[in-house]
Image 1 (cartoon, rainbow, N blue to C red):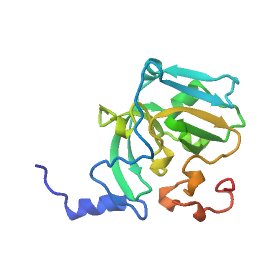
Image 2 (tube, rainbow, N blue to C red):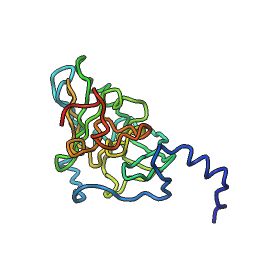
Image 3 (cartoon, rainbow, N blue to C red):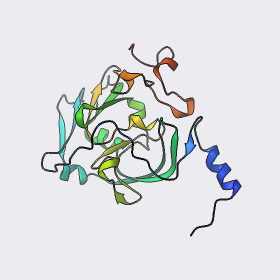
Length: 210
């Protein structure tokens, strides 16, 4: 068994937490709706909307799995108030997808689409931030189905609902549009360090009208 953490170590961990969050040692399963069944022969990742060339770009599972693999160490902050610190994620950087299928110059936002029509909107700057990752692995192991296999988005600097499980594609947009939880009362931006949990906290310019 490992040595228990000292008070200094515990204090350091607490100092890394956004306001209102608590440190989580495990990884709870949280999602809306059932876990989808993965069918590799039917799986496709799409980039569509306002692409630079006007075309839709698609990868099947084998092709997407062959894209450059990157590893990032980043936190995960759930709006339900638990935080998992220093997790190792592996997968394809969002920047890599943007380089392969660039947006048109006027694009400002991205809608991330997942199974069952689930969606989450992001500013393009948040999507292309260096740690934003389409994760296939955690701690060197493939994600489980409950945690988003075959693909989930990790956006470490925003609340975890901004990174859907079971992602199937992204839509480039020239104006903001609310996603699934944003339409149901969650904050349009979702910055945990500013504790942007709910839409009633939004200020002018934080998002489109509900």
